[in-house]
Amino acid sequence: ELGLKSPGSRSGSFPPSRFLFHLRSLTVYGSAVADSLPGVCLAHLQVRGAAGVTDGNEVAKAQQAAPRGAAPTIFSRILDGSLPADILYEDQQCLVFRDVAPQAPVHFLVIPKKPIPRISQAEEGDQQLLGHLLLVAKETAKAEGLGDGYRLVINDGKLGAQSVYHLHIHVLGGRQLQWPPG
View 1 (cartoon, rainbow, N blue to C red):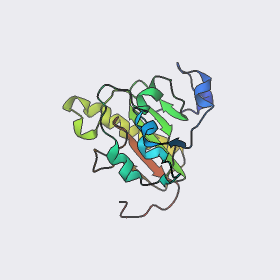
View 2 (view 1 turned 180 degrees about the vertical axis):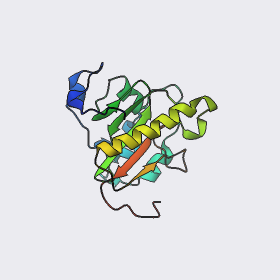
View 3 (view 1 turned 90 degrees about the horizontal axis):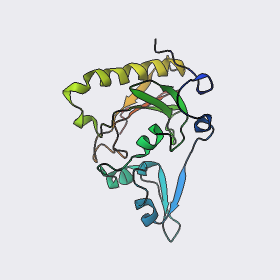
């Protein structure tokens, strides 16, 4: 057991205000504005051009995302407390929070605190951490009532539709999921 706690009962270094706000979507006007938001998950942005047309193709947005070197990602900003998130669990190695654009009734992310950009860039020394992420995903899924099943997804790189270059595991459930997924 990992001792999962609700955000209200959670002790730690994050201020309570971090739990009061949960961004569902962000609409940005003009692609130049979207380009000026380094580390923002482009798959979760709605970009409106001069004509007001929304580009809803999340795969295309993910293909526009690229590793930004040492620039902070949206996940590193959640980790440092500069962006709020609906936190489900935290320990020394990882953080679990609800996805801002859920694709299922239950959709949360498990991220390592160590900044590994892609699963394909994980190293031999990351074995324990990667196993820990999966066990935390399992325990959080159990705590979220997903006893009948759920799906784990890791997107890797441009063709894998990765939009944030900080390793993260999507956990989706709460309904019958379809196959094939993509």
